Each structure stands twice: as C-alpha cells, then as structure tokens.
Length: 230
Image (cartoon, rainbow, N blue to C red):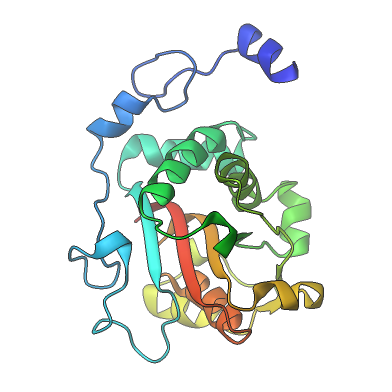
C-alpha cells in the first residue's frame, strides 16, 4: 500500500526518456551498450559468462562474472551514484529486475542450489551512509528469484580505502584479508553456488577476495552478479 501511494504521488521517471514507472525503462536499457555473455578476464565470448579455464590463474576464485551494462554509459553512472549517495534506493529495484532476468537466463540449475550474499560494507562506513546499496540490490534480487539472501554471511572486518580512488595495482592489494565468514552460516555454504551481488566491478579484486574466502568453505561455484563494469 505504501509503495502504491508513493508511486501515485511521486512516480518513477526514466532518467533517459522521461517515461513513467521506471528510473531506467526497458527500451532505454536496450539502447545502451550492454554486455553480452563473455569472459570477464579476456573479454571474449563465453557460455553463460563463465571465466575461461585458460584465463584463470591460481589466485582467481570467481567462476562467472555476470554484468548487465557499462559504467561508461553516462545514464548508468548517474543512476548508480544517485542510488548510492542520494538515498534513491528505488533505483536499485529497477536494476534488480534486469539483473534477475539476466541471471535466470544464464542459470541451468535448480534455484535451491544457490544462495545470495552481498558485498559487505565496513560497519562505521555503513553507519555514516546509513545503508549498503549492495544489500538492497541483493534483497530485491532475492525477492524476484526466490533465492535466499544472507546479508550478513560475509563480514567486512577492517576499514580499507575506497577502491574507486586507487590505481589498479593498489586495488589488487587493498582488500586482502579484509573479510570473514559469519560462523553461524558455515554449514549453509558448503557445496552451494554463491551469487555475490555488487553494483560496480572494475578490477574484480574485492569480489575475488570474497570468492577466495568462500572457496575455503567448499562452495561449488562463485558467481558475481553486478550492474556495471568500468
């Protein structure tokens, strides 16, 4: 009822064409330079976004990186920044709809084989911002797909500099050993396919560090699901 009233008073409006009921309407999304199924490491076509075996190194633990679109699209950049810094959390609902559809098209297994986790935020940073956009995005995706979301399964244990302000080389080192697993979920993780949700991926160092941690607890597959790559 609250959402219905809110949509009547202040309906969503597409940032690109102005159409009502979406912050980014399906037609405008189609017009953008969106990703096809490809290997994130070599950027060549890949079945269901799988990382090619020949591309993986011993220190890379993600099996798939599913990306909706490019961060270089100005509309996408503005939408993500507004959802992250300006309390426009409803933007994430539109992105969750598109990501859910994209994931289900590239998923052959039973939904019960998967769980969803979100890229965690350090507690003091979350207190300062009041919310973690990855948690909200993951919650919407969980609602759409029926896959259970554990928003405190992975914990950020130490403060690190923002990845966006670092060089690629520094990003690879910045997040090392900065995450831990909530011990009460250890039995749930084993042999599961884990979907790690975030808004933007660049070097993939943060997501890979989480995937490395999950592999230690015998997950069968680690999949990153993100809105955009830069």
